[in-house]
Length: 263
Length: 263
Image (cartoon, rainbow over all chains, first blue to last red; front, side):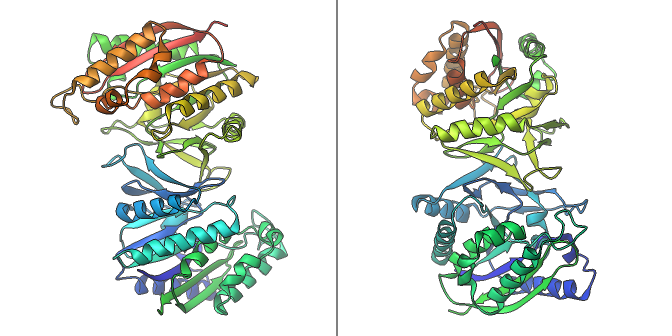
């Protein structure tokens, strides 16, 4: 059963919040960890692991190992893949015609079956109790409807599972919020981030599908494609927003949101 | 232009050969390194990097970083991807309908665009001068003819390139040569390895396509699928076998072979 959903940022500032807004955001992230303290597994969708042009990925490697921090922030640790659930998801997506690949590394099983984690996974994982994961990767080259459909199939697999599973979407939003940031300042980053927070807080996530391509391209988010998968998965039931927060202490927008299952 | 091909094992014993046969094999590997000392780039096909059921992979990450040694044998180092060539290969395979994905990690470019290497790549690389690479991964779930066709397309892309490129196939053969090895003893491992060496030494590689599925399954090689890609690539011209060797100092068979372009 899909018991809830956490939208979580992956920026270093949430680890040591420099201001009140980011502290509020970190509190929402802690609430997500707390709310999902009793789940059996997570499905974690991350835009900073494998990046493929036109295929989703499901990691099948047994061991998930910290490998790559951002700006020197190393977060060591190892997690285990929920292989049974990963296989179910992969098979269901594949059978439905979703472009998806299963990803293992080095060996098919055992200690050498390993997969590297980046800040995109490691930062959300800092707020979550250690449990088995299914790591999935979104793709920007897959059309919107197919991403939503992939989410629906994911949601159905989780519904049919006897396990209690939380879906975690690792996502940051506009990346052009600061003149002196790596992408400079673009008003579309502000516009996108405001819209995303509106859609979250006003229960209007269905409108994600209507965001103009140009706004997304110019805002430079990494959140959009994972959120479409989330949108599809949320269609399996009703979810209640328990908390949300937004902060932009540097050049990119970070949002946290916790939804728990109502029915 | 595809200037030559090296079939190279990835077992630790070639690094410190324990016997005369393995020393001979290591000499062939050194000859491969020497023969390709003046190429611009390598294409390296490895069965111990990403493993996908039914898709080939081309790594697009800028930086290729040592990550995983076998039995504690760590071989640190970093290599660069020949991105221009990697993109040409990916696009040509994709256009021809080959099931293939492009693989990047974390970031699309720059220092965070990184990809992990295992012993499957690191051991052959010990014998090769440091040059840009295109790392490709084979797949066991793709039928034989499609693997050969993928090799043909790869060969054509290399032919059309103004660069001098060597193709390196990382491959070990039967893995059930020792009663006390992890896979025990199976006569099919011997049979497969003898056949592979015959096909190499007697210029009969076309017969790779006729090896019974059952023999391959029982012999437990990781060589077969990469060698089919090699077979396809070799169809772009004529290649002369300059040296070959076989050794089996532990439980798996290792072969080295060097072909250079004749015409």
